[in-house]
Each structure stands twice: as structure tokens, then as C-alpha cells.
Amino acid sequence: MANTFLRKTSRNIGTSATTVGSYTVGASTATTVIGLTCANTTTTAITVDVTHNDGANDTYIVKGATVPSGGSLVVVGGDQKVVLEAGDSVKVTSSAASSCDVIMSILEIT
Image (cartoon, rainbow, N blue to C red):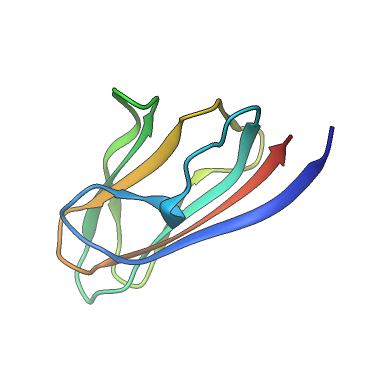
């Protein structure tokens, strides 16, 4: 088994759900999200939704979380991890257009 640390980023996320880094877990692969941070790039507070998608359904990791102007929200980190299986992805939606940058750190096991 190979273990590979990767980072996936998405910039200027707005009001449409965006798959972070266009990353979907590949076949015969398991992925652990070890960090996910949402940064507000605007001058007013925003709210963000972060969901896990299993290929068909979205499940909230965080819903309507406030991110202050110029601030960030650590959604995954520290003791919390999220395990993703083949076909899974993580999506982010913001309350305002082009207002959120996201970085997701992962450990991919193949």
C-alpha cells in the first residue's frame, strides 16, 4: 500500500456547491481528510456549508457556519478526521458569490 499526502484547493467558491479541488476518491483508494480550512476573502461575514458526498447523497459536515471577514474556519483538523471511500468527495457552498477559498489536506492510501 502506498500512502501519499496531497493538498486540494478551490478558489472563489460561491453559492453553487463546489467539489474541493475537483477531487473524487478513485477506485481501490481510501482517503483521509486530515485538514480542511475555509477562508473568507470578502469584507463582510459569510456562511459556509461543507458536505460529504458519497456519489449520490450529500451529508453535512457543517451547515451555515459563520466565517468573519478576512477570517477562516477550520472544519476538519486536530483530532477530527473524515474518511472517504471510492467515489466520495467534499463540497463547499458559500452564502456569497466568489467569497471563499478552501484548502483540503488529505492522505491517500492506494
